[in-house]
Length: 111
Image: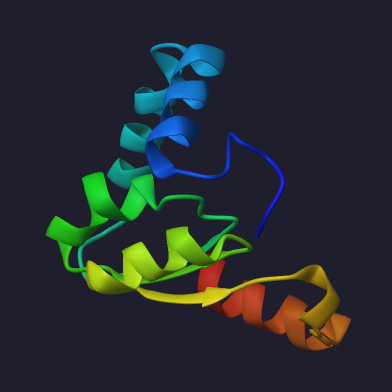
């Protein structure tokens, strides 16, 4: 990926996010990680530098998959043990039938 300076390096991205979100930046990840049980599977779409995985989920043994458009972020996460793929809306093709989704949601989310 080329273009944005913000997206050129993980430390620049993290610095900009901290300026934009302040203390809420870390708290957001912490709160989300608290909801994810050990051994769960997580799909992180637009994962950026993988802050959720690197700081909170790796130690929980979570099966993490990150998707992002930045090749450098993905390569770094793979080197750290995550499963990741380059992501582009142009190459995403998902077909879900409404009846299958409703049945799946009922099975997974309702007692």
